Amino acid sequence: MLKRVAVLSDVHGVLPALEAVLAEPDVSTADRIVLTGDITAGPQPTQVLDLLTGLGDRVIWVSGNADRELLEFRRGQRDTIPDPIAPWAASQLRQDHLDLLGSLPRSFSLSVNGLGEVLFCHATPRDDEEVVLVDSSLDRWKEVFDGLDPGIRTVVCGHTHMPFVRLAHGRLVINPGSIGMPYGRTGAHWALLGPGVELRSTNFDIQRAITRISEDSSYPGITEWADYFLHARASDADALAAFAPRDGRDHSP
Image (tube, one colour):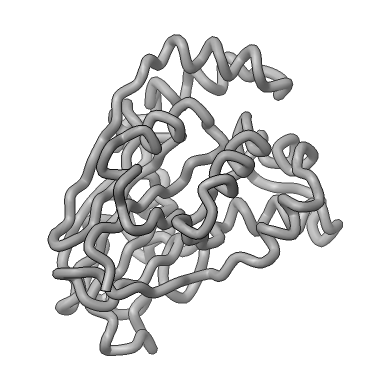
């Protein structure tokens, strides 16, 4: 059973944000670092993958929908990706990166002190792009938990880029938020598990990060991209309004 696990989700190829979180003492000393998907679709995909693979077996990888989409695009299984930066990011990946993404599981479970058996996934346990939110109904949570092993008492997901902790049908649900594309407030958001749950936010020099990304990435319009996402120009209200219809409700909150 692991004592402390750091959860990093939705890095989206933003190297300065990832570096800032990896430098946190509670991350550097954690028993494991779990990545809950959407690691590469962003301005510095190869640098992010190279940094994370260099950490070796301490890192446990879970695939996200954006990782799957990049791989499908490179394999000729799809012609487009909804995220404008994703086709460019896909074109940057080396074969070893593609092999890695192709090997990633959709979910992974670990036993964590104080939390029991924890399932890590990207969006929901059954789907990598399904939407559930902090205010999704209990009926919705029951639906997405259908078929889940009763021994799983904690579920960690990402995908919506907004941190929360809630209880649903006796299971603790945790979303650590996003490292590289936060909605609602600035900072690189992550979570520390064991024996409880701590939602963390790491601050870093945003303007310096924007300058560095702009110099390092050849994506067209990279400065505007970095300014928008690192400054969290999309509010939590904007994100909830966009996501809410996708969680099965009839109207936005």
